[in-house]
Image (cartoon, rainbow, N blue to C red):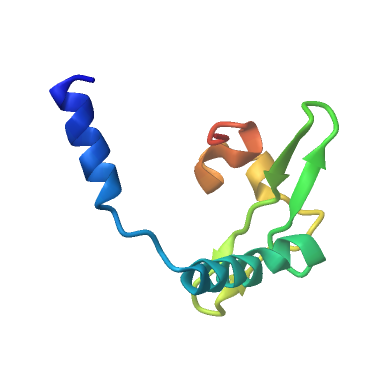
Length: 95
């Protein structure tokens, strides 16, 4: 084992991982944050693209004054504007 590998092993051993409670709290926060996408209550919902086989967001023309989307499904601006939502409706920002 090289000196560099030994240093890497030592660095990994000294890392303090989150507790089980911290992990579970994070999981619950994540669940709460994405629930709107699964229960259909999100203003800009996700749709399955049957042609390309992916999930794309409908997009939202956000009204800063009213704090809500000006458009309502089936009006999906992300499918017409490649600059909206980082090009999500055009598969530009899928990872």
